Amino acid sequence: MTVTAAPPAAVGASPTLVSVVLALAGLEGRKMLTHPVTWLGALGATGMAVFELREQAPVLNRVSVTLAWTMLPLAAATALVAGWAVLRTRGRTDAHPPAIMPLGIGPRVGGVVVGLWFPAVATFAIQLGLLVWVMTRDPVTSMVWTEALAGPVHVLFAGALGAALTRWLPHPSTPLFAVLVLVGLMIAFPYDQSNWGREIGLEWMSPLARPQDIIPYEVAFRPAGLHLGYLAGLGLIAAGIAMLSRHRAVWIVLGLGVIAAATLGPAQLGQIEESRRVETMSRLVGDQADLTCENHDGVVYCAMPGYEGWIDEWAAAAKPILEAAPPDAADGIEIRQYPVHTTFLLDGNDYNNWWWIEPAYQDYISRDVVPVGSIWSNYSSSSVAMDATSKVMGCEPACDGQSQQVAYLWLASHHPEIRLIVEGNVSSDGAPLADCMVAELWSKPEAEQLIRPNWGFLSNSETSYEEAAEILGVSVPIGYDENGRFQNGCP
Image (tube, rainbow, N blue to C red):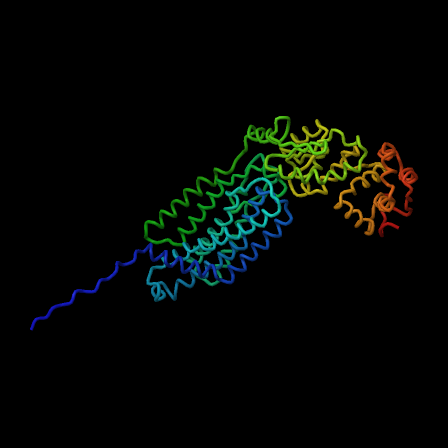
């Protein structure tokens, strides 16, 4: 009898460790992405971003920063979910791993760490959705992607930190501890406001640098690119510690992280050269400033680079004020933008030792201009209208004389937002006397004919309420306090 052996069946090549980890990453990434806590974090991040952005002017360079730090709830959620995933992948002990993953703990945790790209990409998708909404609000300037991308990179770092701590401290409470560590890292570094613009301080060693809320982005000197690399280095360190094993690739990841964090972290700190500050201000302030100027109905409007889209807003806000004033009152007025967070600082008040205020102030007092800022309160049309009113009246920031207050308020209230404020004042506690007189003046159809011929008399700081009332045909309410206010609204 002859026996022949059948050829052995072909067997596919054994999968490599890399392919197995990538397959695990796809599984773990989808699990993290669909976890309810991830969704709660995404909702929290979206809600925080919407709350902050609706209060801000749509200035894209500042939006970039906001879109980064408001992703913190999603970062915290990712740290929790990644930590729980590591607990699950551990099985009962390292000697008895889950049957579906006959791997060492390092590669198993590697699947979790690599899978963090799923929530990171989701974070970027949320940012893009929010950016689409911001773009519907007529934004100015341009996005700074090195700022915005700190959000997704921070999510990667948070998840890797949660995985690393849980890998080496395998306890059910460890993921929550990881979140507390993240919070601690955000508040551990001092934030020295007095040195803004002169020195980049230790707050930039935090994984996610907080926004400088009242400092215009144009003079903030934020080392965004260096910080993004530093944050990526921290993420690689956490990932390397989480995946630590004998495999060479893990040590390469850990080494790259240490090199990036150790070099880019200190590189982003230190003094800012005076020449750099001077060069920055020369682009924003002075005769050679890189401003865009347009003439609307005889008034010149000048905007800083990137803010040209606001010129139409300023012109629309000032137009009803200029039309209500006597023909010659607004001759030669220029509405000029300065890199200040409030134009109040340009009226001779304390500079608060901020290097960028004094050059703007010195330029301002050398010109006959209406100053406009670069942050919400100075962009909003009502603020522009009040500043334009002050300039037309020849008194800044507002008139102090009694009759001046009446004429100033009558002129300013041609802007609808300001009129709404005044209408609210006259019915509330502490109603100003001038508001009460102007509210009565609104009922007179001939008010404009009464004010224009008597402009010089009414704009004189020596003219009293009683003298103004006699000309305008309104009453001077009695019973007001020494500050000219009523306790229960106008009588």
